[in-house]
Image 1 (spheres, rainbow, N blue to C red):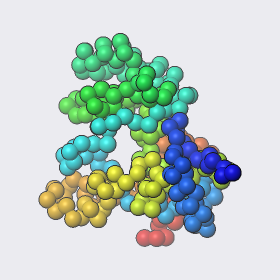
Image 2 (image 1 turned 30 degrees about the vertical axis):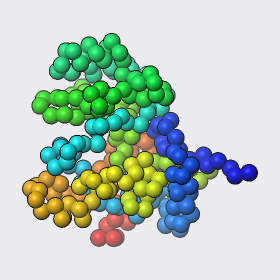
Image 3 (image 1 turned 90 degrees about the vertical axis):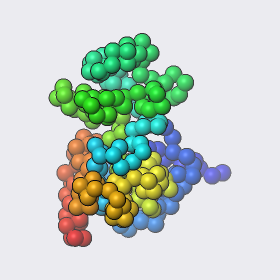
Length: 255
């Protein structure tokens, strides 16, 4: 009888599909000689060097909608639920719309029709996608910055990870990778970013001559891992310095 793969996305209880787990397993076997072992992590150096430009404040200027709109994030893990709930009164206090603030306090932030830890949608977007000083963004992130709090334990992991991905493979360890054409068959990010957003494709951005050069500027593209260093340091703990060193030194050699 075929053994079910125990692969899962780190930071969420939402499952990988069997197809995604299959493609991930194939990828690891294909690249086993280039993946760098660092403690319990398998570091996908090549993918983590893929170039991205997270010019997020200008996303709405060049795209019809941002990645925070039109859906809800992956559910958070059980340990993160009480942390978020404890901060909801403070986060909601920063909302500019009193009706919206009362709506949160009355109905809560969780979608009761979905698995535990799933954030509700409101007006077709994530509940936390709110206006702040004339710009729309994550209310959790805005609160953390204004209050001087660590954003990492407060904000859903999957909202912080892009373009990085962390996949627990069970016996092999945790694959630390990024979304690329090759990993998109199993990454939680799929193909949408690669096919539709300039942040994930310098080649697509180069062809977009109708856009102001300052928006998603070509000289602003950097390796995927550099956009996530605070979160990686928070997650990787004692292995962070070692893994950052591996990625940094190998990238300098490639240039």
